[in-house]
Amino acid sequence: MPRKVTYVFPRMGYSYAAFESFFQILGYDVITPEPSNSQTLKRGVSNSPEGMCFPFKILLGQFLKVLEENPDKYFKIVSLESYGPCRFGYYSPLYAKILKDRGFDNFEIVNVEGIYPPWYRGIPRFFKKLIKLIGWHTPWTGVKAFLIAGWKVYAIEQLERKLYYLIPREKIVGSAEKAFNRAFERIHHAPNKVKAIKEVLNEELKRMDSVKHVENVELPKVGLVGEAYMLMDYSNNLEIEKKLAYMGVDVDRSLWVTNWTLDRIIKTKEHLNHMLEVNKGYLDFFIGGDGQESIMNTILYKQKGFDGVIQVLPFGCLPETVAKQILSNVSEDYDIPVLSLSFDEQTGEAGFITRIEAFVDMIKDRKAAKVGKKKSTTVASQ
Image (cartoon, rainbow, N blue to C red; front, side, top):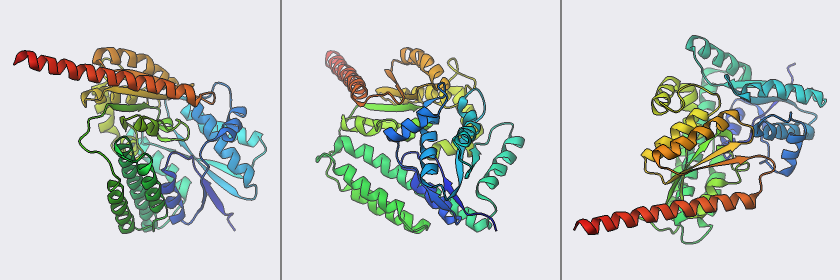
């Protein structure tokens, strides 16, 4: 008789609600790691090679905690994988070695990766790994699992976007966040039916719109670029989006689960060609991770009229460190301020807040100076 398997996957922002539904529809038990905290980080850091990047330490800490607290269960640990000049490709074998050295034998690591060129190898490899991850199921069950997970991810992202739009405009501080928390829980526990998810999403978006707020107000715009995991996981980036929004900023994150998935799995060729075109003269070859995206999205933010960009990078991330150096040239050439923030287990919230406050004050001053200059030019021409 085959042993019962419980799935555990990296916790990343609010998207865990969708991944829970995915595995439950397929008939599997699932345990979602808790948001990162000091104990999680301590576990991960103390068991990781010194030179590994911060996301590795975070995720190792999450997996260690789950295994320690559930010795009677057998786990499939879902791990993302990549190729190229990035240590991301070493995550899975290192997880396995470290966990086994710690005495755990009730797990196996299962990799998931995007579709990479050459396509005649990338596509079969992707489906081979997918089958190893979830096993064989009836076509309808598999389609339903992907469909429901996709809709829940989409719904959660719509609610998040609405939250960050409302916070800098709300009349009663905290009212938007309160409405979002209610909306998220409803999506999280919504029946696994597309119609039900759509209905809940529409109801909660209308409810969030009813939060008293000010429209037609022009706010400074800040775009967020950087390494995908750190961008999308609020518990490890010190809730940078929320903090910026409360400082009166229109904040936009460049990477979400939806566009990351489309670019890495479905529209890989179009995404690559677009990125090479935008990055021409700065970084037109692959360096691993999300380094190329950081440069591309900074340029695109400038073209969309944003007032500044913040790069969120984990300490030890080689692609983002390379991108950071190039972004200084992009910042000068395109006349857009760029602030690079490196995160690790030593990052303190007080110093972090001070830096983003200073950055926000600077772009507000720049914006006010440009508006003043434009007005004086208009008056002089009359």
